[in-house]
Length: 109
Image: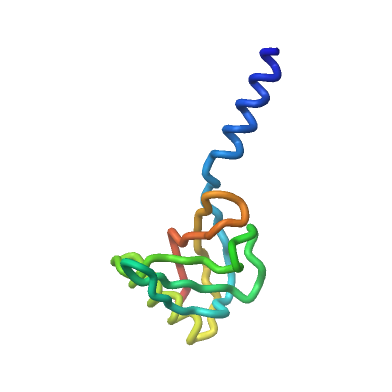
């Protein structure tokens, strides 16, 4: 009985735990855009090659209303315009198949 309870609690914890950050390297920006949402503006982008995880709509989102978002958008736009790959970017996801949210972006000169 204790084994069953432990197994059940472990599965619940695994299912409810937030996913860790995912790091991607050497990806080309395919699409970049913004959309108005209630209370602000959300930016999004996709890459030419597949992401390592399944993000909703294969898109990574971020808030463009703060300093990070503005800097990230500028970095992504510069990479897309020049045709250079992003050297690294990170995002997190609350559950598999759900929305992915950008947390870091880096490009090479």
